[in-house]
Amino acid sequence: MENKMVQCKSCGAQFEAALVRCPYCGSADAFAEEEEYMGQLEDIREDLEESGKEGEKRLKKGLGKVLGTAVITAAVIVLLVLLLFWVSAARQRSRARERKAEFLMEQGITTQQESTQE
Ligand SMILES: [Zn+2]
Image (tube, rainbow, N blue to C red; front, side, top):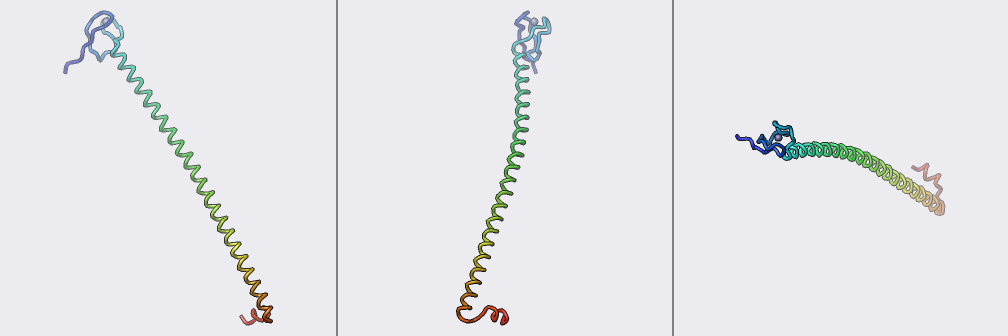
C-alpha cells in the first residue's frame, strides 16, 4: 500500500500525509493538522455524549423519584376515597337501622324484644 504524499507548504519537500509535521523543516502540514483537529473535535464530541448520557441517567433517576411519589400519592388518595366511601356506607347502614327501629317502635314492637328474639 502506497502512502499518500503531500508537499510541505513551507519547504516544498514531499512527505507522508499521515505525518503531522514536515520531517525536513518541522512545519505543520495543514491537512494533517486538520485531521488532528478533527480527532480532537471527535474526542470532545465523545466527552459531550458521555456527559449527556450521565445527565440522561440523572434525569431518569429524578423522573423515577417523581413517579414513585406520584404512585404513593395516588395510592393514598385511593385509600382515602375508599375510607370515605366505607364511612358513608357505614353511616347509611346505621341510619337504616335507626329507621328500622323507629318503624318497629311505631308498629308497637320494641327493639328490645327483637334483639332477645335474635
Ligand atoms: Zn518542510
